[in-house]
Length: 96
Image (cartoon, rainbow, N blue to C red; front, side, top):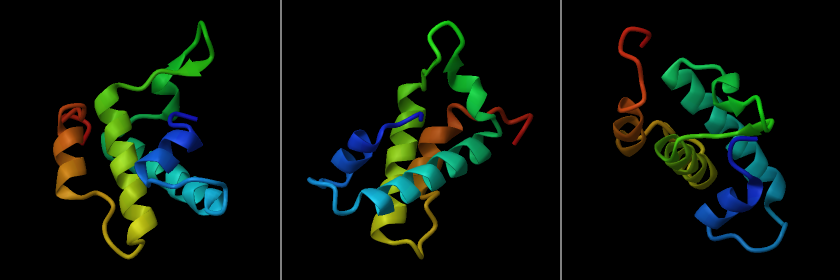
């Protein structure tokens, strides 16, 4: 996975495993939302030599902000102004 569960829980200031399932659902959704917004497949960030995902810091930050939005207010648009602003730097306008 691009962002691990512990990092997402840290973003939400969660300790323990009581909410792990909810965080995992929010994390999976946030990754999908951000990649869809950027119009890139998940494999874009896969390092073939190591088999590990290497995500730019700004993309990872946007994913974590989406996780926070999805977890705290599932009815709100997770692509907040802050997330869009961060991702604009990585979005190819020709594909958007």
